[in-house]
Length: 142
Image (tube, rainbow, N blue to C red; front, side, top):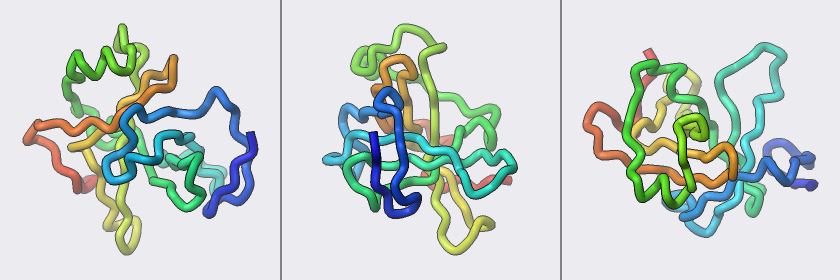
């Protein structure tokens, strides 16, 4: 499918790459379908991607895999969420975190309090808000 975006122009995305947020993202509940796009402005591998809305060309978030920054990152996925996403095994799960850049890369923060959990098989997702006090919405990479 062709997708018109503000940041990347017109791009082609495979229908089977669409991620459906069953409850939308907090603050963006009416935007439920997204794709993850690689960072194409460099030939060097980078740990950052884009979570681009299918429905809103202006809505895109920088995301990363949180284990790059915190190898010890862990949390439990409630059984109700596993049921909602139809998760049967850990191998089905992909985890991302939204990054915030306010000013420059040196001031980038990561939201470890609200990981994005994706069932990689059926592409259902949710942004889970965890109560673990070890994590905040503005973690700094050290």
